[in-house]
Image (cartoon, rainbow, N blue to C red):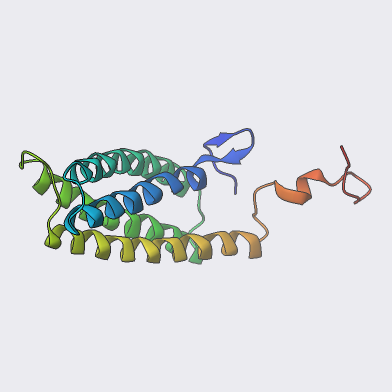
Length: 162
């Protein structure tokens, strides 16, 4: 099985998934600093970082759904569905905090919102674990994407040197 969405022979979804995760972590750090007494503008930076992460998560979800279409109905499909659902739950929790913050003038974070974001990141950690399991399942089933050192091997089995 190969991903339908590819760039230069590499699947897009595994590349895209790093953006929302990194942005969600950054937003939480900004909010933690805001709640801990840092400058007030960091709360707004955390809000807009969460918004950017939600946009990236939506694009990643679309790519994940396109890839999910071709996954066979076995244990790999169950892992892929769980991976996408867990990431959707994480994004929904951040969406909830963004909706609450959108009505305040400075868009700063509160302790309750920070706790919600930390729980969402814990859920995201489960998603990272499922993503790693998904990649191992692709490796063990022989359906790994062409790449790495295998792609550099010549027909004689030796590594091609530039």
